[in-house]
Length: 239
Image: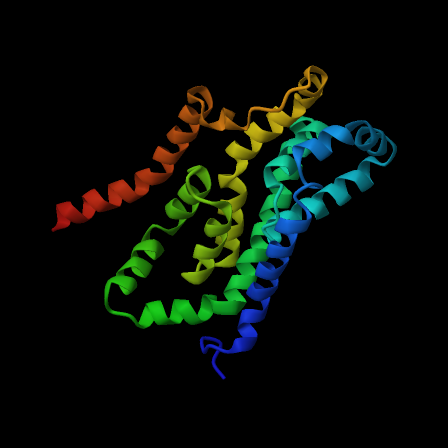
């Protein structure tokens, strides 16, 4: 049987992710929250100091599970990475864990509906086929834009590449590179949580939309979009 044929068994990976996500949404919201982090901050810091390497491995495992199963608390996990491990290596730990979690979703989608839908798009001669070809022509730019632009939900940016036939290696490296700016911002905010806790306040997660932060990210978006624009003008010139 061809890998591009649809079978119910191929839905199992995605079904497991959806099921765990729904269960986690109702059962883990209180545990993967800023309030829980604030209440347990001293115990977490003490445990990190006594078991640093183990703390890194456990934290990454939890972060990977949050991303892979789309559980609530990804933003809190990014803050916790900065709080526990500082801006560096906290940013590297956060970005690495998020990338691994994203790859797991990508693989679940690829072995689920990805190959089937990608084959359907290849066989389509209409608008769907044109979209697939357009994505293929500017794949790296589109992948980076989906990571850099805050408007794209992380889960969607993990699924779409799998459904259009993006290679695993290209998906992985563009994910890692593309989420560095946002990951750095949230880790940086997390690194200052000690002062925030002392004042009894909550962190400003909307900081990424402030101009001094959003401006450079938009500049990176423009840089990622430049090959698409140049290619479009080049086609018009040839026409």
